[in-house]
Amino acid sequence: ARAVRGGSVTSARQDRGFLLPRRRRLSGSCEEFIMAGPLRWLRQLPPLLRYSALGIARSSLQAPQNLWGPVLNDCSQSRAWQMLQARHLAAKKAKGQARVNINAALVEDIISLEEVNKEMQAVVEALKEDFGKNVNIRTSPGALDHITVATKDGKFPLNQLGQVSLKSPQLILVNMSSFPDSTAAAIKAIRESGMDLNPEADGPIIRVPIPKVTREHREKLTVLAKQLTNKAKESLRRVRVKAINQTKKAKSTVSEDTIKLIEKQIQQMTDDTSAEMDKLLMAKTKELLG
Image (cartoon, rainbow, N blue to C red; front, side):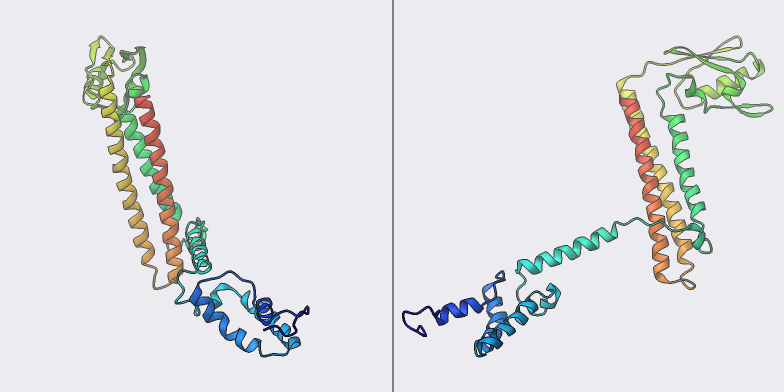
């Protein structure tokens, strides 16, 4: 009923509507639970105190969402609560992706990160050497650079005993004029290099015919390159396990957080080195298949 008929005084229903704080509805049962109690005593106050209390109620409704958590335990479908949880998980995930950069000098009593890095880079260099030896299209003089010749005076690289040149895409020449006595040993080393070559002697000159490289052969070399990369990654994992085991030995002298931080640094170094190997494999595959 209206307080004054025909006047400008608002109805009790409009008055209640004016007093109801405007906010996003959570769900029917939740809103009734949260709002019914405060409004019941708020309507019983005189107008002046009512407006003051309304300001306090509005301030409390703007409190951080985590204060409403206990009240909203039965309101799991609340959009506001779900958004809060999503932001928390996203922040946690972003924090986990942060890179570590430990000063190696500060942890040298626990482990030498520089030595670990050297061991990992040695694995990369070994992979590059394997690519040069075993995954080559054999169309350049450098294809024979990795071959070592066993002579009576010791072992020497082929390119130190003879002058290697490419006469045509199908023929490599090795001039052994400076060390003619090592010609037979050089032929044997080329034949046993695993490159499926059949060298022929022409005086001090070694002629090395290069078979035509077919698409099938290139694909086989690509498979071999991947196998060599996987083998190198196994060696990399062994370096990682060795470093982490050494770090764990210091648990009795340093905090657990320090141990975890060093382990994260080692894992990061491992991931970076593995990514470098993947780039080498990608470049070699592109070279082989075009």
